Length: 342
Length: 261
Image (cartoon, rainbow over all chains, first blue to last red; front, side, top):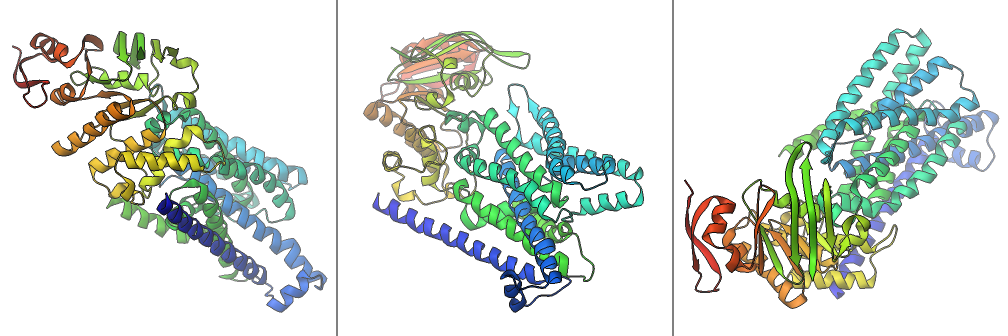
């Protein structure tokens, strides 16, 4: 009992340290992100503007352009990372993520359709976007679920992933067909969305996204223990009293809603849902009560840093954030594949 | 008193029927071994009883209560079930895995309480795993790993444990180690144990009660002395067996056999 308690305490303090360090890194990335961009700001400038002493132009740059974008980047990173963590948990496969399963693509298809039909970014449209993305992602997810579900055998994680990959390819093909129908500005929008450029960088989008995360994130944390137990496999989980099918559906729905609402404002940023849970697992291990918050922070940090790079690498132009994430993510993904093959 | 009763149980995968009209009784406080040839449906029966597999028709009673009328979390407080070859996720420690056994008693954000800790420590002690508590499960040997799963089942605080082939992939001494642990749990802690076993002689050595199944039907049941008789084994396994009383344990043992031609 004594040794158990001491070990547990040691472990807990390590977890707290990891979360603290991630938190500090995230704050540093925010400060750095506020400074950098087309108009470079010094620490001194930043402090002055934040305390209310900025010129109109400076206020515009910081409060209207940069801050909402920074916040969106963090929220999207956290949301996609959590979504990936849940999907990896229910699929019992470390290579699953919302992008791979075609959930992002489903959301994207709806977003693209919507932008084609209603080209103006009115306030109303901003708030309907996450819902539309959810419908698209939800339809994709239900379809994947039904195709991967077999009566009496239930849901096989492997079938889930294979069907998801197929779905993703199918939807991407549908997007290409749509692209043929577009005029030039719409075409640009679609390519930019696909590449994962944070296009909804204004306070309106922050407000449209925030409520989703405020509901979904605590709910997912609440389910941490269920995710742990699902990790030992379907049959053991049943034996421990988890209604496996029901919990899986609920968690999948939460993951889909998280991914859809994020992708609606950020474009198709893939790999976050894949990498962040991995990094987090290396830092704190597989227990979801600590893994989930760590994963959210890692995801936020990842997209936040990628966004700084996206805005500063090729000034005055900018690279879509999703591309930067992918440049880091693709090699990491290959590394994981190579490692898991051994 | 019976721990488990099945009435007219039928199990089917898609259209193929594996078990039909099975009436089976599992006595309380005993070690019961379910035996039968490959594909006879013995694992399916265990899974259906453990509500892992949905059965087609019929009923399963757990302590005289219809299992379909109980919430799955409530069942988990009365009955633990270990499937064949469960795998632990990478990076889970022995202590963590055993703590999952407390799941039926936890809700939402709740952390492990002092009482949960005590039960986990007790489970580790009974299975002689206290020293391995902080080791990763995937670094353990097969025999140790099987004990970890049993410890997890113990942490569920049930009085009934179902096990599907608990000795698969284990060598002779580790097979005995696991089965002796189960016998201790039965004798000292009063657990009712039900296991599907492949090895007839091990089943006869450790079980108080044996159930023989072929083609999804109950062929015979009773004490090892009643089931381990040539005509029963002929009917169940299609073998011509020679049975003697084993001198060390006094249990029946099949010394040699031929296929029935």
